[in-house]
Amino acid sequence: MKEKILKIFKITVIIIAILLIINYGIFLYGVFKNPLKFSSVSALKRKNFSVENLMNEDYREPSGLNYKNKKSIIVFGCGYAEGVDLNDDQTFEKKLSDYLKVPVYNRGFGAGFIQHAILQVQSGKIDDIIKNSSTAIYIIANKKDFIRLKTYPSNLFDPQFVYSKELYPVFKDKDDDLVLINSKFPSVSGNIFSRLITKVFYKNFYEKIYSDLEELTIIHLEKLNEELKKLNPNIKLVVLMYCESGDMKQFNKALKKGGITVLYVTELTELPMNELLSDEYQTKQYKHPNEKVWNLLTPAIAKELKKL
Image 1: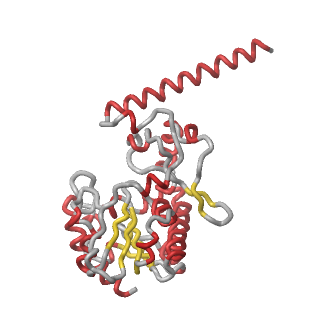
Image 2: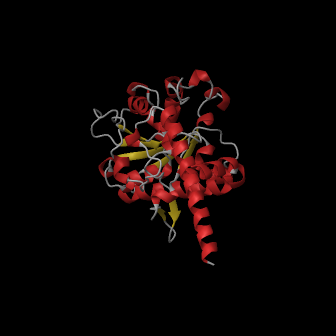
Image 3: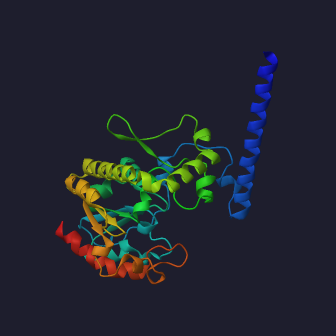
């Protein structure tokens, strides 16, 4: 019996050792292939997501603060909202501010999703902005972004996904409410293998679980709307979908019922989606909307906002 237990113990130790070696091999490959600092990433050490770190991110400066005594607009979203690859005067927020003559706050967070917006609102750090805003806009780049509710976006071996010390924020349903998951063992739940398996699963089974992800996205947007209205009952949430309206009837119906307005870029311009995603309308490096797109879309978006 003792020999059997000892054998199992040895096999377990060998398996763990092999996994650790593979783990460090993947880690070293990524660190040397990408311009990363060892201090900012880790092969094993993980910690839960920090709302404080989120609020200390380097967000763009607001536009139009010179328009005093005007109700502002606050914009949330990923790199599309942030204005990746753009100068401050080329962003959607700056152009919307110039067009409507109101202050516009850019709370876009690259690689983020709706949970990042909810956490910003819940933080209490932007209460004054929300209380003085007439409208909140959330920009969704495409339907596949719904996966971001479960896993970090970008490529499988993106260093910020695989090696980040901080877990990607994910909400769970608890007592009919969304709450941030805090792992008791973040170094286990956030290890390289777990992250890669999660990424591969959601990427390969996206079509089969799309309806579940769509429903979860609706729930998150409703939660964002609820949190905004706790601070400002009169604020109106608008979701700007950077995709075609296509098979989004259930999505539109659910959000409309909750008092949320949905706008689709293809309904704001005569250009088809494939052209909006062409090189002419995208930035060179990260393929995000360029200034030409926002010059085209901003007047149409502003027109819709005036109807609210």
